Image (cartoon, rainbow over all chains, first blue to last red; front, side):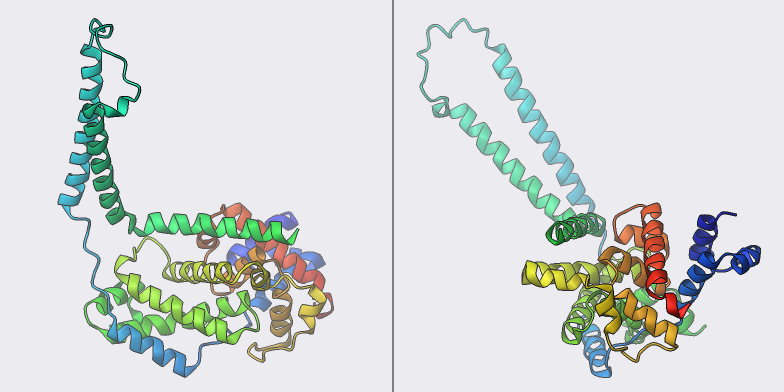
Length: 167
Length: 183
């Protein structure tokens, strides 16, 4: 076995019988092995008794309730909102397509198309749908996997920025 | 079956069902590992370590209902602790952030007095040398000391298993060169 393999094995599973001979002949791996076993000698320091008491008392007084699974109606509402939003967009598209353009010449061109009440209403509807969707997503946002991933990315960015700062 | 033999998930279930003793067992099982992790990450700042340790467990209690069994409990707590530390130093500003990294010169770290918390001379020497490691390597080393698997460490650091193993290699080899006289 190569030194790298021996050291990987030492890290992953400790000293095995198959590596003893190598360790007796290779000073680099022997030292590596000493560090790895030496780190287990270190006793972890603990918090003070007062801190223990504070935390345990907090836990007694603030027991959380079990997290209920996401209610079916929330999922249904999200799905319904998506379908409604999509349908509104489709219908709006069809309405525009049905206009063959023959009356375009008759209609005076408006300077500001936002004055047209139909798009205005659509914008308001879409905005309301988006807000509802956002509320529903906020409920889901609590999911620990999502927040853990974001926290992990945040951590990586922090490490990167700290490295840049050092350099 | 004694409660101390229960799995972490079972202890959490019991705690959520009004059993305070279950939380005490869970807390006792991991408190030293989390405290030691923070201590190594932020050496020499006991008040801050105590504060972040307390904040960590407050957050753990608040979120226990959301804990999923598909991850190691200690790794989950350490992740909370790590994020709180990052938040703290981000709020404190860049100047103090650099102190969190503990990236002092190796020599100065070796001059640090031993905390007296380690048993054995090699253990104490390693503890001092560890403080001089760059944050990521130190983190891998400290978490391994707490028996967090390399896979879990990779998840905490949001990196691959190979990178984590590589960081451990670098850490151990740096310690080897620093601790030459002890080996």
